[in-house]
Image (cartoon, rainbow, N blue to C red; front, top):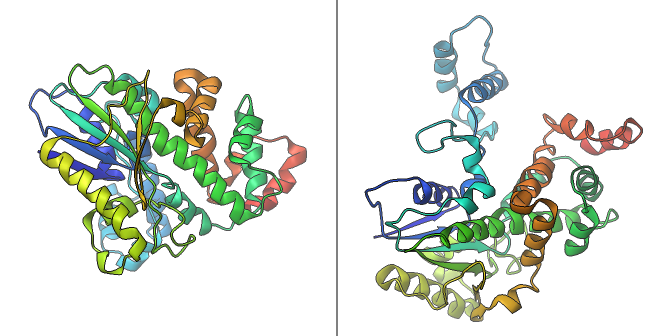
Length: 361
């Protein structure tokens, strides 16, 4: 049996792969664009606080009432009103699957080998998984994004200029340009970096074979971003399942079929058209619309995602990816919400807060 998960489903598979369990759940796993690091874990107390906050937004009175009464009123609220909250759930920690919040980190992923019953797995990310963050940020009112991002980097990194050079981020970038670049950093750290962290742990396994994959077939149906240029989040699984084959441009047919055939062959036989990826000798299988290419370690070292990983190691060693993910990238995305914008303001000297106040509305 082969288990396949994408995004939150991939995070679920990552948890099951790493949580000690004697009875096998499956033999092979395909993890697409997701890991435990996409999980924002919350304690029971944090869950209750957030629930009450969302209930108040629905107009539900929470003072001097039992949680049961509040919950009943929330359940009976109009569905459209609940949808407008745009509230995303979060796993509870501690819980049976997530022992503590440290589980949802790349540091934990790189130190936790998969179960011995796992024979092999594919760890795949897309070249613009950050499109999901791009979508959220575009719906926010914050402006001067490049200035906000570079200010956060200066406050929270030892060498912010190096990160800006890798992604050519300038304070003078227009908002659309800045957001595209920032969400590329999100992609390379939060998705590519997460896959790499799991590969490090898998190297400790005496049994599991690991394949590192990058999906780089642009989404021809994208509406928010330029069509065909970005391999967006979820396009990997959509193209695999073939729901829109009759609408695919002709020049996409070959690459999509190669992608699909490689996955189906792996599910059926366990074979994959690339050598095993190991920390000391990395390999990466890249799927493009023109076909498949396997990059070796020397070729990989020159790529933008690998340069970002090297930067993270310099910044914080084995904690470097989490430092960038939590302290910089998630913080930037979170503080685009006016509810949390004050947290960004608190980082900066008072004489610069007036400008940042305008940035954050």
